[in-house]
Image 1 (cartoon, each protein chain N blue to C red):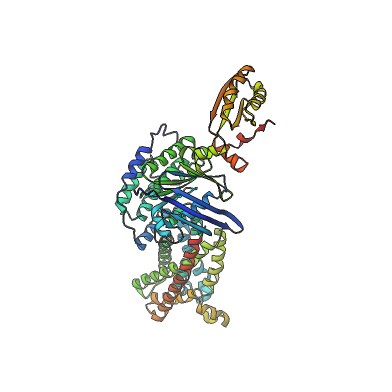
Image 2: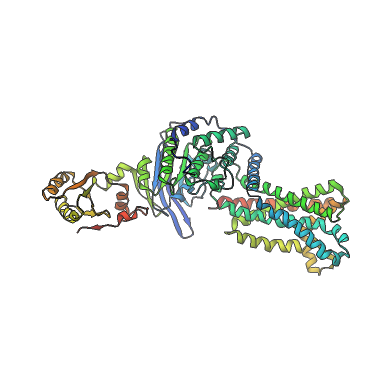
Length: 329
Length: 279
């Protein structure tokens, strides 16, 4: 592993058009070596198209991209020898067994027949797929497919791995396994570029995040920086008695001087905080008014809130209903 | 599935280990070895989905029996006499028709995620396609053997002997491999397998029927004769009749080999260009 402090990925004004539709519209990325870089955005934002250009699967229509120091367009073959791709839809042969998939790919990397077999067994063991190995991949569960897919990407250890929405459609247990695997890859020295539409996934895994919307990077930084750019934090309050929520909202609005948001949870209120000093006054005020609370927490805003603040609309994730809210005027 | 593995232990330590275990990276395999690996993939697919051999077993039997007994009496006086003329031709027709499935299969296959992985590997670029064609050559061989065995059963007696028959099949396989690059091109161009099928039929029916497979072209009107005589299928049938009868002329062989080279040199690069640009 090279301990290169340089950039793993660098793009300048990357553009991809499909007919009149501009899928990627001038994306600039600077992904440091090592760690996880998250590309966050809703469906259709241009995440997959960007990854496909970086992995040499799509021609670039404008701008330039260097991956591990090599120009993606001019040195595609060198790039291919250093990166691995795990696509959004399992990049496996469904008709073949798990073992056959791994042996085939190992052979393509130049392993001898016996070495390919041995490497495939190592990988199946490590990814808890020994029993499934002889079965056709089409019979695998979503989580098993994902694990096999990632196993197939590390037959030879890549310097950089692209994971395109690695946990989309997985149950929570399988998702946690994939997260563990990603952390193990990073610990082994591989740089991971991960796309996701799950805000908590970026929060959990990524050191830095680029938020993409309509083919453009609309924000970039550490998750902490992104959250800080939205405001100093968010106050989350749950009242013990739901009927007192409206009264609490009015009171908090007066004390804090900011907009109070009523969540879909009938007992919950949130407020974006600009002046943390005022929060200290809010709790005694609620107490004086005889409103008891079960939660009174000041925290960093979630990435959901970041996305809302950046785009003026919620992220189009399965959490949509969280943004169905009324605001006090 | 998930019910059987109640509580799986953390995979992370094992994954870290397996990253360490990868050892030195092996040398990059050459173009032939890479293509053969993809050929192995095609054979594995036959193993897992043997139904796909239906076309290479049923087509040859149907074509051979149908045309022999349908036309034999009318065209040559008797089926015995017609079989001597027809079998080399029907062998060509059967196998050439089956090459159509190369395009269909590839069109379907390439839409799947696994081609993204193949295309992201540091390998000789045409290998996935060449390997698929290697797998198809196995299918063509099965079809050829079926036609020959059936032909021998119903009375075909090749004067060129075993060597002549083997050489005929070898030439036919080479021609089919070469012509398949036309179908790989259409597989890249067309959006659906139905479209690939439609175009393939549109090309293959005139090529195989407007040829010297079924009848001697001298009875045809002159404009049709002109087409039949330049048709590469006619050239191939002439060469194969020669090999099977032990009277092949080198000029006929050279023309067929020229067509083979032409197919690969023209349609191979076009296919690869489309393949590389395919999104």
